[in-house]
Image (tube, rainbow, N blue to C red):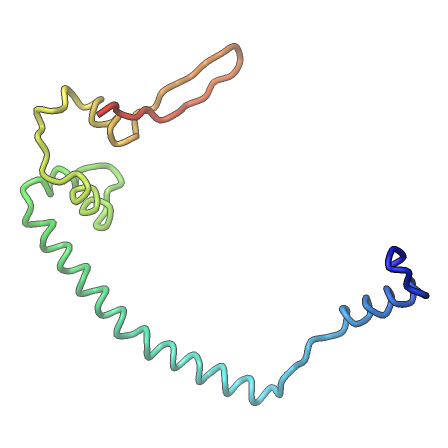
Length: 132
């Protein structure tokens, strides 16, 4: 405020600071309670049908996944649960397996093949990516 040639910058700064420290406007507790209960029940009423649709969607995904010939293979992957295994299968799609020489090529393609880089005392593990 000194740069603005204010006549009393210190008192104005204290006034601004005091205003900033005041409590915010508070509403009546009864009104706030009633509004929050109403809002909660409204949001809950909107979410319940959505959750049903999500369950139906999950059942359809599981049905399609189980009907695929490679589902057992993707279910057997470590850490691939009921959500990740179908997603991996969908992303992988129907593939020409002869295209991949061995498992390390598939691992590199998936980005899960670790590569160690060393220089002196420094050791860093990075992901290897396929050139396909």
